Amino acid sequence: MGVSVGVLDHFNIRTRKLAETVRFYEDVLGLENGARPNFAFPGAWMYSEGRPVVHLVDISPTAEPQKPDSGVVHHVAFVSRGFDGMKQRLTAKGMKFESRQVPGGDLWQIFVHDPNGVMIELNYEAAKEKGTAAPAEMADDIGRQ
Image (cartoon, rainbow, N blue to C red; front, side):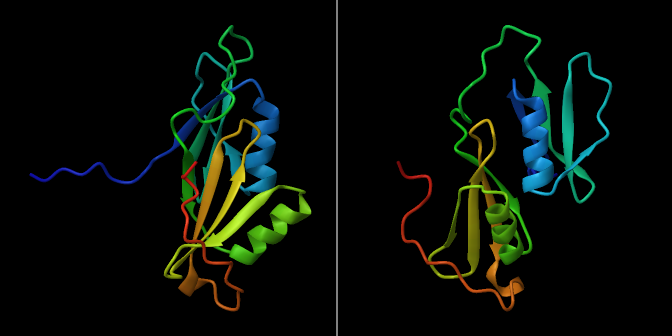
């Protein structure tokens, strides 16, 4: 019997900025605030294509300190569609972002930070982005400090 870890199901953010974080994932990235189990603590589940991919936990009623970024997790990535549309959306919302082409040209990326400092990577297959101008190809990796 073989085993497999499978694909990423969701990531969880513990925040004192619940409303602002929900707005970011809805208004900026286009996720939907959807159904969530009746946990004994406040929060929200953000859906993409019918799946709850971002779980938010509101820590404001607790003494838990707000962490300033994503800690040892450097970034979280989504397979995405509509490279030009997302760049336009981010620009219209006044969001700082970086777009780049992975060396070799098959993958285009957009990097943006949520209100908690979590870096979000949006990946686009170049072949599926017809009629779109390629971003600059970068030889360095966004993860290098």
